[in-house]
Image 1 (cartoon, rainbow, N blue to C red):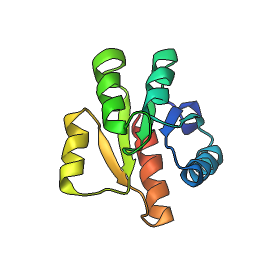
Image 2: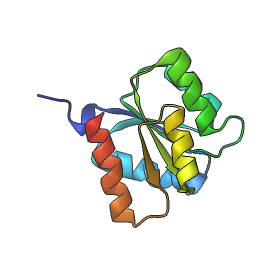
Image 3: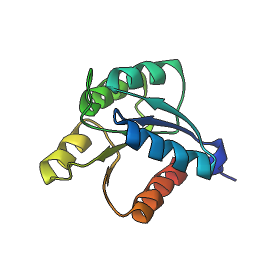
Length: 127
């Protein structure tokens, strides 16, 4: 039998306080163990320090962006962890860049709250 959602370890990388707060409430509600990182460098440091089942990665952040952080994680730390972009920028070229650096998927911010939550839970279940 696979892991339950409560057994999953999630890293959410986001610099916006409102988005962090919303994601924290949602992850607490479904019972996941999670950590927050405020930029890509902090995400890289947290992945070096511990194992996660899945990383939800914003793309545009100060210090280090999500594409650079993903590239470092894939090349130097963990080639298998699921990394899903969570961003407001849904253009085809942005999606292509995400996949080129090794991200596994893409979720658009600003979608209907129920759709967003279902997508988050679906990815956590896959991890």
